[in-house]
Image 1: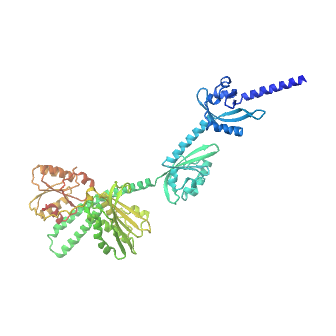
Image 2: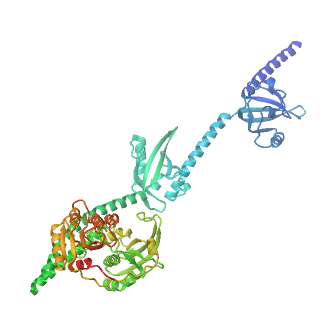
Image 3: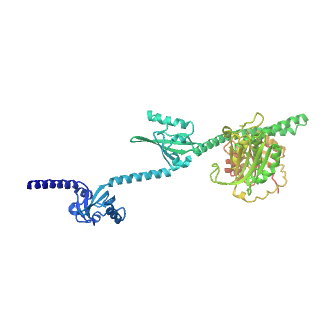
Length: 635
């Protein structure tokens, strides 16, 4: 019997030793109800760095500087009410660093059922918490990038299903993220891209053939409202365990393409303008020779039939001069005579003329804006522009329709992009006609381009308007759709001096003849110079001549008497007429200056620094116009 008891004690002692050893391998402690440590296993000592000798007998929350998820009283209440508690705690290691643990507390009762101690198990989660914090930080950064990136960012899986949709993508496409996530990306594509997309993706996954991935290209996209617009798309690929993710970076290039097209159009128009300006210059020189000699011949011819022949030839030169004038206007090289123009008064004064010109089938409705200030512009060119626009509108309404003429004052702050910010007066002519196709809209301001039949139009009307507006520092905008009519708006800048009322200019007195005065004619074209000399002699002037600016200065330096300098602007010899005028005035301060040209580059006028009282005569000119330009006016 004694042997049996001894045997059972040995077995119990061995089980106790095994239990104690097993418990020592578990990070756990036993605490009294007030938190005093009773048992401290080796495993928990490894977590916190304290040995059992150092830990036992001390309060756990003081030893470990414990941070509870809330008030400790709540933890204890939950522990005693349910017999256990689970939660996350932050402790302090012996060396001072923080240790995050998941803790499980269990109450131990005596045989009478009274709580006597608490067994606490822990599992360190410091590294996992740190890793989780890093992941959350990266996700927050990525979310910040997605939310603030100006370009749209969309991610899809290997089946084309949208996984994420940035705020910029919401703004660009008009969809909320919840409307897109979980659906196929082809919902954002117009035909034929939508139908072909899944095939592209499947082919890439199967063959590795890249069409967009890692390359980028320009494609078309579709908004929620159905509008199609150009985008620049770059796609990146990330291979994750068990899946592939594709990220699309999308930039709306509508504005860029529009600006590029406008730049191409402006460059084309500038090139054509330079060409037409050069042609008009030579053409005007020829017309000057022809018209001048015809006028001189007219004084000698007495036969009625011969005079009729001369008159027809003169009429033809006048028509040629009009053609050259339109070409110069398009090329922005037409000399302008800007004056204060009251646009509302000008439109009112032309309404009756327009009604007679356009016919009864066209209903004209002027809509004059209030408070429209005067602008500095050539009134004749403004009238011609309005007339040309109205006639084009009439021709676009063969069965009649409505023509509306609007005026107004606008503040430009970015649109149209071609204009500097500031105040502009607008003149808009809109009709209910047939409208224009995109192809016609692109070419409508080109000289000689017309959609009218042979003999019905020269193709110079709108090009002349375009050139006049650009030369005046303004802009012309066109809106037109087939079947929806056309609206053309002219913007003219309002300068500070135009904002106040401008009084009427004084009327010049009668011209005073100056027979016997000496005119120095400076012209590099011998035929034009010869005609000018003949005309001046016919008017009673004495003449000197020079074929270049340096030659003219040599005449002045010789001390020759000269009352009037009559010079071409564009000449060979390295000196322009403007430069000659400045140097001549330095030598002869009281010298009168008259400039003439078949065309003039506006930049030369701006930068020429010619005397302010210089008079201007455009080629070709008549004998009467020459006489008027040379005679000084008296008030």
